[in-house]
Amino acid sequence: LFSRLSPTPADEPFAVNGAYIQDTYPDKVNLGIGVYRTSDGSPWPLRVVEEAEKQLYQASDVSRHEYLTIQGDREFLRLASNLVFGFDQEKQAQAEENKSRVVSIQTVSGTGANRLGAELLTRNLRPGCVWVPDPTWANHHTIWELAGVERKSYPYYDSATKSFDFEGTFRTLSSANTNDVVILHACAHNPTGADPTKEQWKMLAELCKTKGLIPFFDLAYQGFASGNLEQDAWAIRYFFNYNPRLEFCVAQSFSKNFGLYGQRVGALHVVTSTISEEVSQNLLSNLCHLVRGEYSMAPRGGSEIVRTVLGNETLKEKWYEDLVTMSERIRQMRQALFDELIRLQTPGDWTHILKQIGMFTYVGLSEEQVSKIRSKHHIYMLKSGRISISGLNESNVKYVAKGIDDVVR
Ligand code: LMR
Image (cartoon, rainbow, N blue to C red):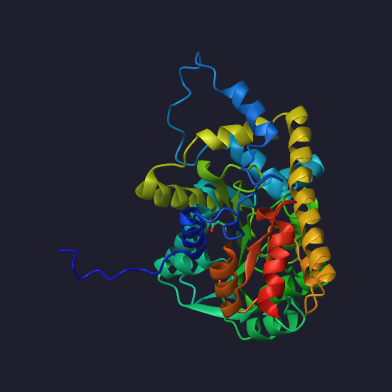
């Protein structure tokens, strides 16, 4: 029965991570998968998460393992959408009106939100194609391939300037058709760490409106990228307030900004242009239908942690501190790697390491150099040359810089 199956391509971040774990070399370095690591290379349960966990898991709560609703935990969803759209910073009446444009559902983290949104759009709008940035998080391809929608790419990265290729993006998307979906990384683009400027985001919003495109934001790094929640959601909020109104999706993940990788906490927010109870209810019922047939509902453990933190001002303050701890350490490691490459007089311009933001940098190694640095120095990264900055620390950054220096000479 199954003998006709052929293997599927391995998912690169997880494959590289697996190879790293197998490697017995004592000085091996993992710059592959996008997970936060402390200055001694360990995982970091956020302090605020540990505090919320203590508050939450009281054995006396006999309901603690009950089902959520199919939509998920509604209080979690309210807080999650406030975080994305900033409703809690708006005047009451404005906030109420704006909130009624958003339909939210809890998902199995960011991947689940991307997948559910893809399914919703595919079934109901039948987009001619989805435009994905080249390069992008590899899973965007898998998700839309499974949705059965043709994928086309727009040239996101200019390797000459090592930054976002606005002209190429704009030119390519100008040829898109009404109802085509456009995948946009809200901040800290994965894998390049290169983001559009505010002016460029404004022009992209206008383009989406004039061409009738459906923006689909992937928001995996809010607060983690810059340490500032507003700044990292700026593009989404701009699109939300764009006049005339845009309709779009946001896939929100709490994996990185809460360090809840394995808990699978996330939400899909669908923004409508109309304010209509009927439209919202129909939209929600369609989303619930898809979720129920797929996995009934998202898991509750992680979302309770997020809800506990976001619903409590003192814990929220502590979360902001934890976000700064993570983003600041990443910023310092960017600086340390840059300084070391300069000290070694490694050929090339390395300023992009400082300019790019978030967990990842396209360090600028060729596929051949990536293969060499892995076999010779046991330094693991994606074949595109994407490195996860959080894998760097005081003890290995010199070693990594020396490895880079060796393979580029
Ligand atoms: C990555 O790109 O390494 C992370 O976002 C992990 C993942 O889910 O792929």
